[in-house]
Image (cartoon, rainbow, N blue to C red; front, side, top):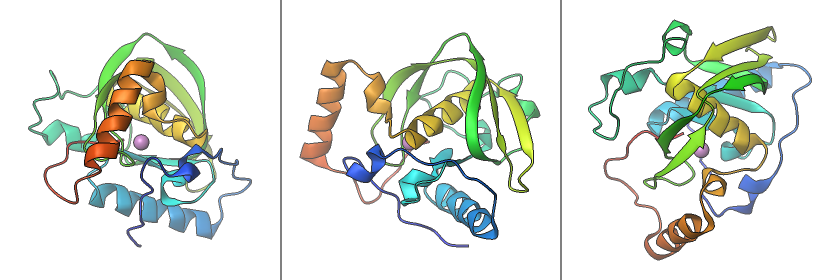
Length: 193
Ligand code: NI
């Protein structure tokens, strides 16, 4: 396994649209394993293939770290009622949301915008279908941060970023801050998607 380089905003490659996987090959399983290692190394909760310069529809997620986190950004670090039943990490090829309901506002970060955060509104409960590492079609129903995370990663696969959900004023402010301050090389970073 290997830790891969993560593309950072405003890299134009993050705006590409990823193509579906026809078959889960050994190479793609290796990519998924590398993405998991990269995600854990960066203290991320989720990662999409596009962020590591592979333009295929693949995401990884693992929200279990939040439970033991001392972050004060969250009122509760309890897992969602569906979320806690799910075997993590989640690896999904060709993820597609087949149903969604409710609303949740969560302060999102992104490994392609390290150390920047903003409130984003998403669906609270989703059902997502895709293929696992063995190529089997699986359906996952989740809520909690995992639901947020999966929606965030699917956006990535369509070339969409979390700032696209912000008002133009807030998005401009964030872009201006990134231009002025850039991304810190180190320091404490909280959970990013
Ligand atoms: Ni992200």
